[in-house]
Image 1 (tube, one colour):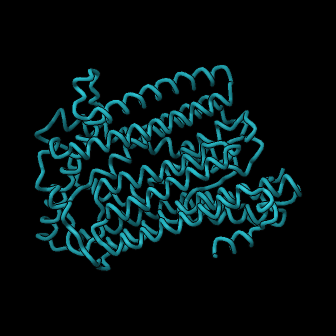
Image 2 (cartoon, helix red, strand yellow):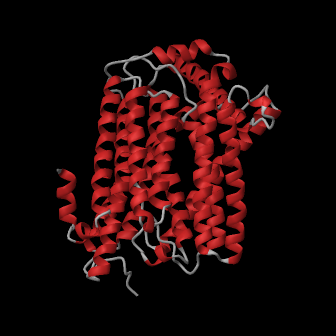
Image 3 (tube, helix red, strand yellow):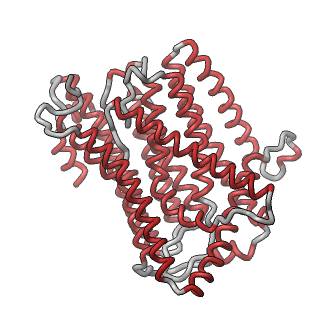
Amino acid sequence: MSDPHLGSGSSANPNLVLTLVYFLTIAAILIGTAVYFIVMARITDPEVRLMELITTQREVQHLIDNLSSQFSNFWRLPLRWRSMKPYYTHQTLSWIFILALVASVVVLIVALALDLAQVARISTLTYVVSLNALFMVRQHLYYIRRTYLTYDAEHYLVLDTTKFYYFDWSVFNVVQLGILVIEFLQLLSFPIRDLLDALYLSKNQQLNGNSDGSNTASFIIGIITMFANLSSKFYVIQFWFLVSVIGCIVLVMTVIHTYNAMRPHRPIAIYWVKYLLPLANLLYLPMLVMLIGSAACLSKIGTEDASDSSSGLLRCDSPSVVKPLYLALTVVAYTAGYVILTAFVTSFDRIPIKGEIHYKSQGVAFLKNMSMLLSIDFLLVANSYRHIRSILSLVIVLSMVCFNINTQPCFVEQINYWRTYGFCCILWVALIVTMLTNEDSTLSDTGTGGIVSALAV
């Protein structure tokens, strides 16, 4: 039986191509990173290499201290009102979001047991939003108190006053620029994909015609952004791959922490953790957004949006997929992955050298969290609330623009300018998409070529 999502004249299976590109890209990144550091270790002078290792070990130890402080701050929630002083707002909001988390978990379990599809969808959305909001509140409190938590006020004073006007073209900076471009395309893909889905629905409702243009555009977006819109038979492979990766991360962290706590005189060297940061930043959105896409797809089963096979990021309608099991694992994997990855990429607060592209951790924290809220908005909010979804996307992107202008999260001013320009481009596209998707008559008369013309205005 032919795949209904493919064009009749297609000579190759786009889903297979996209799957191969997805896994080969990850493999190439990992292998390339390992080869680079092995080669650099061999060609670098031993004395220089020793000094680099000492510096790296010191930086990584600072990262681990920050990571420990973040987790410590995350779990320290006073119960008494008197103990919340002077952070009443942060502590109160934290408890509100915790109660929302607990309630959503209970409702989700009941909904899955009783097969209440709409209730399961709402509880999934509530859980994910509450988790992100809770972590944002706790991180904001951490950045307010971190001088007292880390006992390193001088270090953060230097970070707050450091600024460069230009950057050099080192290998590290080239990698950072590449990550910036990929992140821009990933964020830009959300409003564009939403418009393509709306166009697909409009054409099907009025003409019941083919959707080759929409499928082709979604295929290209999937390759560029690593957000793969695969057929259902590839969903199981990708799902277990992501769950396995997150499980391995949790296992490695637990083993290293336990071993070093039991044998502090002979700890496991962790200088290599620094080299995982570019990988974590690059794969942050693809990994977490694919889990959000999994939750969105699974929560649609049994609802009116389930008939729209184009909507969303994944297709999980395979008979082998057991909804309660996969949705529960998705929620657990997202919780572990989001907390660990977000804390990890926001804990590296070293003082950069002149001309190096580096970011303030509070800037990374805010923009990463807002990126996740943008993905949650587009993937978990139902199509019947497309108007609200579009307005929320405008608010989220506008907040990212204002934050980038006000805070200047990168130490290099050139990067801040270009990043602000990129966010403004995303805001413009989101605004155009909002106007097009909220006018049914306009959307029904607009083809893929018309969309490109509108976005280019």
